[in-house]
Length: 450
Image 1 (cartoon, rainbow, N blue to C red):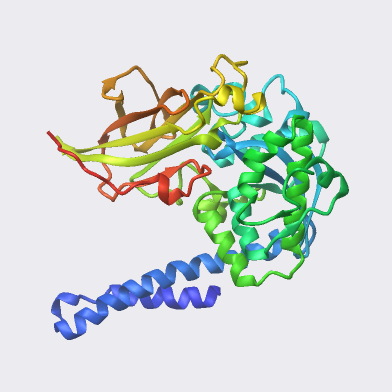
Image 2: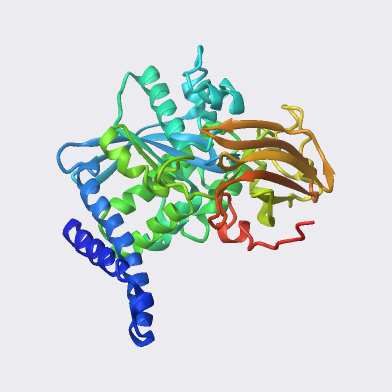
């Protein structure tokens, strides 16, 4: 793979060095096509070469590798997806997968003093990132999440691990599309989920794990046991070797592309390569496009109401003023919960008003990132300017605002960024939710620059 990548890269560079202006159109046109095709092929081969180099050792070819597995629950949003309620240690030994040390974030308790994070992120997300395992991913920077989570795990268990893998139920649904239905065989898990499907499929796993489990299993500890058992069954199916490889790779690639699967390695050499790709989930570095905007959601309800929230993100203004670019991001959120959610949904789902949010309502902290060197100028809610928090993270402008929605209510936040020096097309990254990413990120609908 490395040799092929090198050969194509060299060929691409040679073709790019030809001055097409001096060529007949009959030659210049196919030259342009060849350049585009080789460029795309070169990128794919470089990625494949990196994977071929890292994968064997990270899958335990030389010695067993052990990773902390964070199961993100999108029903309670966090910047990288959802609260990491269920935890496990994923052992990879010569390509074989096994889950052990399964537990919950709640079981790890409170960390006092909190695990230290950098001052910029602490100012934006508070010390909670290092205080509770449930909050390690309030920040969208997965490197911070991973190192904080590993430190917490080591403090509680005394065990040093080789990295962190994060995944959400939507990514699991993609995997189940590849593996086929998975039967819940563990007697205890079957008993806990006796009123839930005996088989998990790509069609029912999201509804089962993010909604039905809460409606039909009252005890949060039993919910955690059910989630852990379901994950174990699914990973067992993955490691069985019975899945058609291309289908499995396609499902994993989709999960990575949507940032539902994230990976961090404790090996600096491995992490340098991982950090070049979306798999690393970073907010800065080689994996970040020049004009990237980030829109991240953190639950402020203290419950599992995000299953009912539908969102869209759209660029509605892209203008130039005094030599700098100005871009407006429009974030629309709707609480689709039933009007009588306070009475018909379990208190564990609504929060029951314990944290000051009325049962059935959803409170969300919306955090937006602009490109490096940009500014966040104003935030407009439903047509009116509102106060907001303006901060910086690694030279990127960060604007934060809090939104509360009653059942059936919809609201729009417009984040206006200025002083943008990048000329590249804008690129939007969002928190993975229960919605398809393609339904969240809308095509630009540009308004007037006046």
